[in-house]
Amino acid sequence: MTSKSQQQSNGCGCLLGLITFGLIIVTILPSFFYTNNPHREVEPKQYVGSMNRQQQAYFLEKNTFSNDIEKLDLGIKTETTNYSYSTEVTDKAAFNYGVVHSDKYAGVADSNKYTYRTKYIGIIPWRIKEPVWKSYVGGVFLVPTTQVNANPAKDEMITVAILCEAVIATTTKLPQPTYKNGVLACPEGTRQLK
Image (cartoon, rainbow, N blue to C red; front, side, top):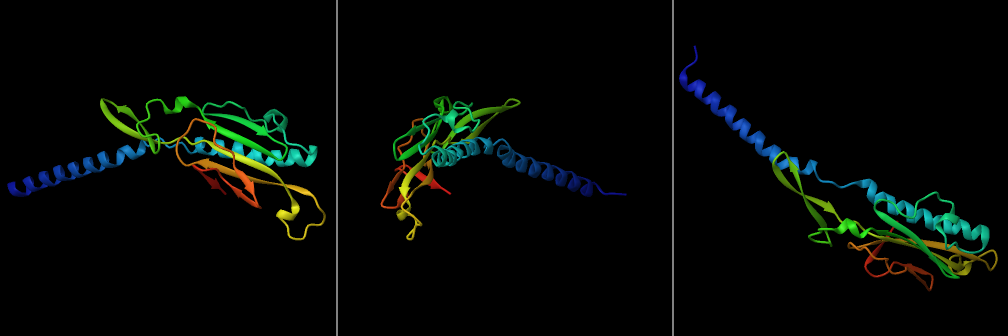
């Protein structure tokens, strides 16, 4: 036979357990709705990186850079759901761009870090934080082999490439990377990707 005090303490323990479980769920649940889509970050890096590599191959074959993405034979679209892709060429360089569509920033509270939006779970509003969409620029430069190799076989020209990512959100074309005195550099406001 159980006493009345034992029955009351079991009830309090159960209630305390439910409250603790509820607090844990309320604390952890929003992290399940964090909408970081890794595929959206991969797409522009892969596209602009591929454009860089294909510009190098195109130059090797045709002795010029291509000013048309379709001629690079990559099979990529110049417009996707999230980005616009383009290329510009000079005699000594090709610049490849992945620029985020401006509609991705409609209603952005802090464009340097996150975008915030409200999602409803039943009738409960949750403020969801989404990472910033970043733009990308790649550069392929035609340089003498003497700037890359101290003992070149002959006086030839080769290509070198760089890929840069915007540090903060932007919906405009990034400035061009540079190649000076044997050094590749990303423009101000960007960082070099490996």
